Length: 290
Image (tube, rainbow, N blue to C red; front, top):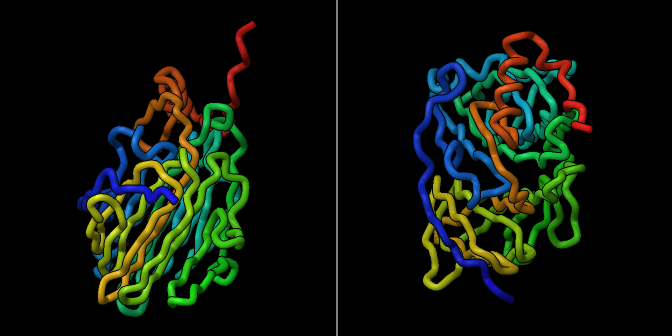
């Protein structure tokens, strides 16, 4: 078994987003080749309502999927295709923006003022940039978990682990999204097929990922893996919890500004022109040139 080495280790950086939400950005709005097909990962854990209460008022998306995973508190959401509701602890919202959608996400803390969660952006291939928008809301009870003999718990949001499949369907980049909790000093090897992009984001405890040399990690550290067929993790004395995400790279050109991600600058300019003209939501793919 070829263990995937950590080719880059970084710490998420403080960022201001939405109407004034203070969060930490693990990656995003820079080069996309290393994380392809993933564009952005935001860690919006906060303990003070003033840091998140302004939320993310109405805004557009096109050409991507957004994945919101809540750990504490709630997020109320509405969108332009008629969906609305509340995402609570352990719930996931997997939204395919496709050809265009408007939505808002307004967070609220729990009784202790905590609002914890993550948002991941997944790029769509050129063939699906202008597909119909789609929404998948998954409740915590519907997300399966596998408990290993050493006490490690693997929550499967999307993809498969140990023969158990997650509830999210239809991902064009074959995404796998796992939430892994390891007890103190536990060691786990998670298969990831060669050729896939893969990263881990640690949000609890300490530990290390195997390699030559091993890579020590702690809270808010991103580990971007090189190629191989498995990731091997060892938890520290206080255990470790992390997201482990992988997918098939698209290897397509990226034209990106704000919440819209296309393949060419012409497509990007067209999207913003449609926003100004009020035709964004009714847009369709242009007819092919004869």
